[in-house]
Length: 145
Image 1: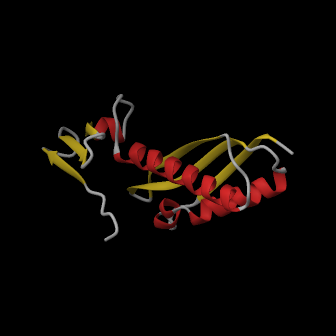
Image 2 (image 1 turned 90 degrees about the vertical axis):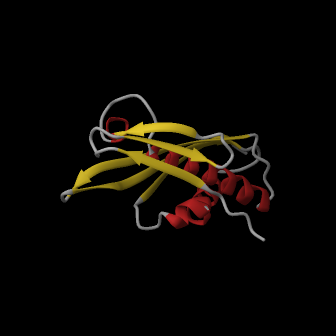
């Protein structure tokens, strides 16, 4: 049976004065959040930050898989995902996700690197799940042929 991943969230109180708590089944994510950690500038986590972490991790793994299938062995892949969450047309929403990656891949030229990076962006399961959101990619090869 394929794995099913589970997380739980509870919100208590009104939108602006309430508090939330999120917990993943592994226990590795166990965090509180609030209106101000999500829509304001208060330090703390929020659903969009966790989505960004998931997307960066998923993309990096998909990129590694694509590089490996093409015969290349990456030394490192470092990806940053920035989720743009803002109010637009009267409602809050995820407006864009910007992926920036850099990888050290010996023996690979930049054209093939860009092709494989694009394929990873399109094939990553998180990218597929977020297909309604514009996703940009900036990819930098650290080691070349």
